[in-house]
Image (cartoon, rainbow, N blue to C red; front, side, top):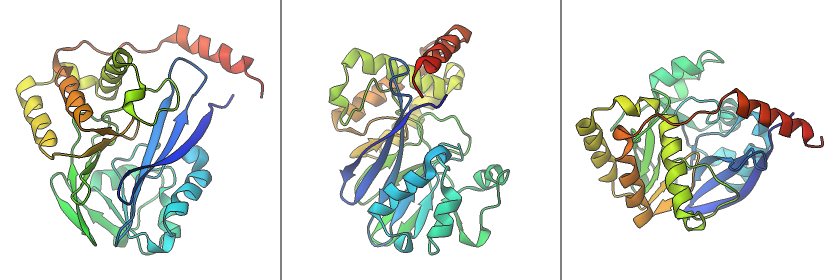
Length: 273
């Protein structure tokens, strides 16, 4: 009983900036999950997160259609969840000139699988930056997150902000632009996703949280892209921040239970192999 995973056409969201897109669980319910990662070309190409382990070979093919492994200079990990590190060690092996940009807590947590090569690490903590040829990248903690290691990435050259799991939204089908989603569906699905990612939202100090949102929004990102959503631009970015400001007063998200699991199992067993 395999969960279906489909690669979508790679999307260009800014000059030399590409989203490798996957859709997980399509056809098994009203929505599916987006699984994204980035390839940023330029003087010193960067890979941002490395997909899932279940289809790492296909992910590697998509990534290296965009950039020669020998040219990759940086691999940025937004956090150490397995759907963001699926091909990490293969990328390290195939990209001998690449430095892994992360933080020490991620190194410790990934160490449960294998130790990252310490001589190929750059530790970048919140607010710190590194230069990759023709651009500077800054680590910025997203508005919400489910891992304590999470750092978003802001590209000064294009204004793209990679937000890790934040700004996620379940998708009813393949979606290229947020305008393709019904506005009411987007609002409810977006808020549900943020609350599931960060169940601690209900205990937030609203004043401190709003200050953090202000700092992230002040980046002035031209594009905000999530590991699990649709790229946002212009007014859609502003609208997403407005939704995020509601989180401290919202109840916890509704979670799937045993009845939903049994319905999913019935659906999976009914699908021809």
